[in-house]
Image (cartoon, rainbow, N blue to C red; front, top):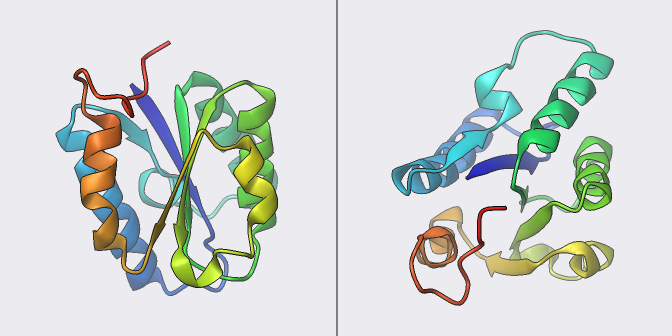
Length: 143
């Protein structure tokens, strides 16, 4: 299964972002899923138009868009990516830091699943249950 991971990058510490996204990626790739994370896969100095187009192309090829929300400030790029996924009927998963539970209430209506966490490490068991291919009610089927 192909999973695009979207996130807020602007004004976020590079070390924090790298840690969080790498943690999520390792879980998913250890379960044999393919991931795309622009920050880790193609973080070259490109224009906003290029980045938007590249992520859109990856969303078109994906089965799932996993949105990692770890900051109160909204990311226009992340919200555009979510709406792109919604328009393409992709399954959307939200991982939201518990501190911002009420900040992203409109995005809940487009998500198939939402999980709250205090630390990114808290998401490990939930992600494994959701993305492990077996007779699990949470498992997302490959389309």
